[in-house]
Amino acid sequence: MTNKKTSAMVVAAIGSIPLIMTLGNSMLIPILPKMQSELKLSSFQTSLTITAFSAVAAISIPILGYLSDRFSRKAVIIPSLMLYGLGGILAGFAAAIFSNAYIWIIVGRTLQGIGASGTAPIAMALTGDLFKGSEESRVLGLVEASNGFGKVLSPILGSLVALIVWYGVFFAFPAVVLVSIILTWIFIKEKKKKKEAPKFGQYVKGLLSVFKQEGKWLLTAYLAGATCLFTLFGILFYLSDTLEKTYRIDGVIKGLVLAIPLLVMCSTSYITGSKIGENQKLMKKLIILGFIFVTISYGSLAFFKNIVPFISVLVISSVGTGLILPCINSFITGAVGKERRGFVTSLYGSVRFLGVAVGPPVFGWLISWSRMGMFLSIAGFTFLVGVLALFLIRVKDNEQEQTGKNERGKRGKKEKNRTILEPVGGR
Image 1 (spheres, rainbow, N blue to C red):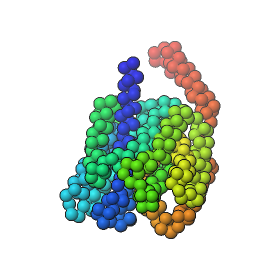
Image 2 (tube, rainbow, N blue to C red; image 1 turned 120 degrees about the vertical axis):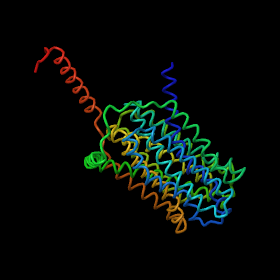
Image 3 (cartoon, rainbow, N blue to C red; image 1 turned 135 degrees about the vertical axis):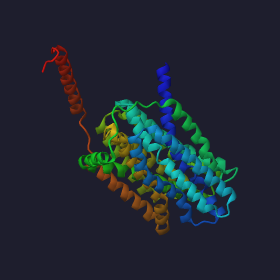
Image 4 (cartoon, one colour; image 1 turned 90 degrees about the horizontal axis):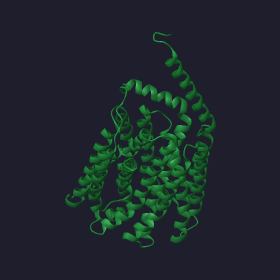
């Protein structure tokens, strides 16, 4: 029972890390129109509070990924969470006190972006270190579900906090971060490294060999993950603005409406992660099916303007995203050994953040051009990414993989027996 409880707390600690990262953008979505009016900002300036956070994180992630491989996951995660909290405090005090608050909010968001770069991607690598096989897929599904749950919770929390004061959201970040720091510090116990980490030159050489051998499918998997986050945050930005300006829906009701597609994505991610195990053929089928759902959804949204049918059709894309992300996570986490896993998963985190960063500005630019054009363009893009996934993502044959493991196991036993039977000073 103790082991089960300990394992559950380890999973809770790991799950809290991407939850923190998710709050960084999703929690701000409901307050963006209010911030724009209070600080007299343009729509582009407002979107930069999302873009600055995500772009800085995208740049920082590979660096912190290398450091997590070089030293340890916890040595990167805990300081990153602290920096994330400090960035929130700076942005909050700037909005409350400073006359030129906007520039300081961007500085605070930049610090938060650096902090966020040491959270979810490192948590994925940590999952790969601590869990194996179907258990790893299950925990990765929980990590993605936690990510999704954060997105569900964020608009509601953001709307509730904004009822007190709109910039109160920034002060909510350090409060939540503190919980994650405590859980990570107490419950995550990493194994000591048996051998010294490779020097930077060797490390880079090893990574280049990985991308030389696995580059086509790995980069396609990166693109698939980034596309999911690009469309998700783009449509949330569009929906937040539309709910307030077109439908006069504000406050907690607005947060609840924004949470609907996110709740569907979160639930689908959890179910997908718990079912896929190590079956890469199934993972690829679900990725393709997910992109079919996303493409159909965005292609159809162009023809719906009333809020109820619009949300109903948008939910189809949420199901698709929930099918895609846990499968992509499992593919990428299992792509390399432990010694380079931090960098590979961190690079994946970078492109996901880039997707988040470009989503709001691109959707904002497209809607100024044409609503119909925006949705059809996005549908065409997701269709293209789905086709690339179909042809370029490579799967291992489960039966061949198992046969190979069995043969290696038999050879190992024979070698062990031979060693035991040989006299001292044998061969």
